[in-house]
Amino acid sequence: MIRGSCLCKGVRFEIDGELTPATNCHCAMCRKAHGAAFGTYAGFKSSQFRLLAGAALIKRYQSSPGIVRTFCANCGSTLQWLRESKPEEMDIALGTLDDDPGVRPAMHIYVGSKAPWHEISDALPQYKERKS
Image (cartoon, rainbow, N blue to C red; front, side, top):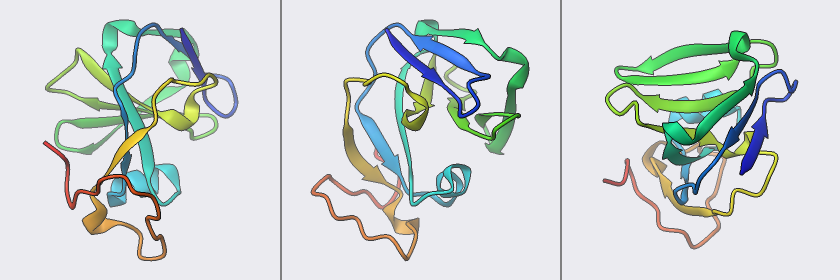
């Protein structure tokens, strides 16, 4: 069981299952949503997600066609990345996890639009766009 929460602890959740290897996304939308050089997400089956508190605090934002991002309306924490075409899957922002997820970043994606002030200094594979 992996526990997580937003900054104000108003939204609390559990994930009962294994996460996919994490991805560091450098697209402009992830950078802005996280207020950082990149957003780090890992995926899992939606059926493995259990919301413990804060349903009324979770707000949805359609950042591009078919993509919804969720965040806490109280503190602004980025929570989920959802594909409307695949409701059986979801991705969680790893920064919201209170426990070790057991996975580590496996790659950098959208490095073609990375922040000019950030230098990627690890040896992970880099992809100009999304890895298929």
